[in-house]
Length: 428
Image 1 (cartoon, one colour):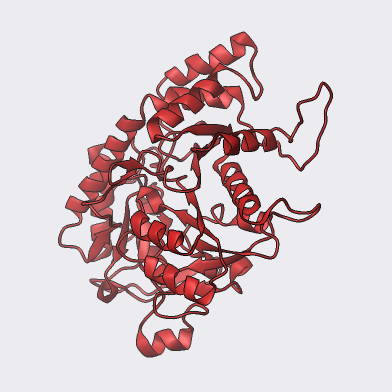
Image 2 (cartoon, rainbow, N blue to C red):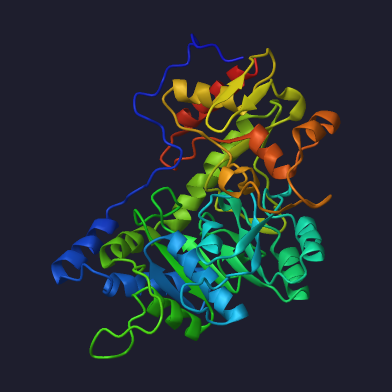
């Protein structure tokens, strides 16, 4: 039970969950954009960032865009047109069609399906990696055999069960859009995430493993697909002397200035991953003996980028906690704790933690969408069912018992140890 009068001293400066780590080379490339007057959506920085991305990830082509969400939108739109043909005016590429999507993620993963008029069906999570459950996905295909699109995310930088999910999708003739926004630099069986889907996306948002302050990238091995996204992202301008438009376009291209930041950051990708892993491993060692587990991964198959270090509290060590739409309450209990208590304790020492992503099937905007578990179809488990059996769907359970710890790669060993001590205090 955390006591507010604890002797743990607050940090003088805010300890963030995951803030940008800048090195100086970024300024050099931004200055180059300024001095050459290439400030818009063309320039050497964009060209170089696209080249480096292909080299790092092992894909054939990349298109630099304004955000990871823009990259996902282009991937979803392209998948829809590949599957169902070009939509009529005023309709999205997935209009009248369904798509299976990872349930426990940030809503930027799934919103592009809605942008394109598709119906989202959420697939429950598995405990091994906190990603899409292949068993639930197979169950979903049994229930909805006509679905031809799967949107897969690698949560917190940990690869999902790629082989199993790919085999299921191939069996049912479905395309994969891979959301690797959080997992740049992570690998599965030695291959980089962002290269497993039919269409792929990464992010350079301000809190990612490397950042441009904003920005994202569409990834593919198909030159025609890359050219199509490049065209769409520049308002679908045709090759004419005047402004000619024959299809819907978007203002989604990355600026040469932001690309300069990303270009300078790429030099430090491996260093950032090593720092994040060190944080994860120190937490893991420091929590020995506590009734908590770190966010898991399969050491025989994958190497995460360790973007965020998270914990999940053992069920028998949870004090009573209830969450509404915006607020949470808990009852302190000696020897037990809960995410709400731990997050409050971390905040009291001037540090930032966060809850686990609230699953999409629990979000008010998507609460009525279909949701598929490994043990059955339909909605999330009802409160009556949970009370009677003690069983929740996996995503809801991880959300209930898990939290994200401060994972800024500028943290010192001493600062990490203070966070560990703070978490330990909550279980006294």
